[in-house]
Amino acid sequence: MTKAIDGNPMPDGTRQIGGSTAMDKAARAQAPAKAISDVSQIPGVRIAHYTDEENGTGCTVIVCPAGATGGVDVRGGAPATRETDLLRPEETVDVLHAIVLSGGSAFGLAASCGVAEELERRDIGLDVQVGKVPIVSGACLFDLAYANPAVRPAAKNGAHAAALALDDAPSPLPRGNVGAGTGCTVGKLGGPTLAMKGGLGTDVEQAGPLTCGAISAVNACGNVYDPDTGEAIAGMRAQDGSGIVDECALALGMVAHMPLDAGTPGAAQPPARTNTTISCVITNAKLTKAQATKVAQMAADAYAHAIRPTHTTNDGDTVFVMATGEVEMPLDVVGILATRALERAIADGCRSAKTLHGVPGAASL
View 1 (tube, rainbow, N blue to C red):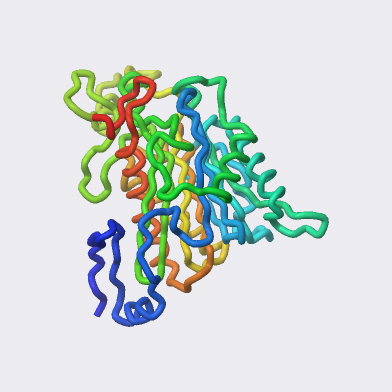
View 2: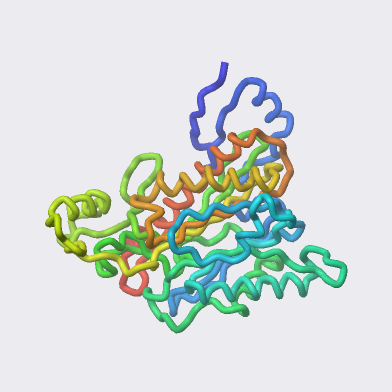
């Protein structure tokens, strides 16, 4: 008989999840010495931010010096990404050294170049006989309209974050208005004046020896909800200050009142391509590239659990996976745990965001 999955919090805030009786025995035999309560504690992975609060942008760098197996799922209609084709299962390179989540729209891809250069200086990368080439994937979100559009994360900023990650990674990892979350906003269907602050969030979930951690920079067009309670955390504010507007109901209501020959909607729309939630799942599971890709696809459902609406034509939603390969686990179990970690990281990103540059944040209200 299979035990129920309860997800009850452990004393340190992590959630231990049950499995079948046979799996429980195997898990106890391989169980970690202590629970992991922060993504900075996941073995083999180093994480740090570059934050420019004054200009409202930044980047977050996740480094696996020994290399990890990577996967990716891109669902949004307007992505800005680097080296995602390389992560496809049919491609030959099967190692990933870093993921960069950055602000700055397409300009922010320069931060990934800086990360690659810093890793090369440290002799980290794929051995190609004449040297080592770091495999660095990344994705960017649009924060140019938030504070100063002329300032974006550059190569030197990515290099700085990579060096910090390798030399003096902060623990616990800061959340909220930091790194790629610095310029994030959410709830933008009614325009920027009614939006709220998004941010960078994290979560770690464990099931026996299996660990799945998630990092998410939440810059969604939609509202963000607590996946466990359904409570609205941040989103489009009502003009009368009465709370958060249901954007899905608003959009459908707008259509219901449009004349049949209407050429354009009659209400405010968010600026095109200004939204994106970019995330990375880190797991100690042993996965192939195809399996890591499937975990990324499963984990992308976390967006639908925590953001409404999501995956719109104006979002560039992307989920990366880094698998460090310590434990053998059923693929679906990894996907379930990764999804749980990511949906809670998304909620955490908005719950941890403070008011900045005049945009109200849930942590300040």
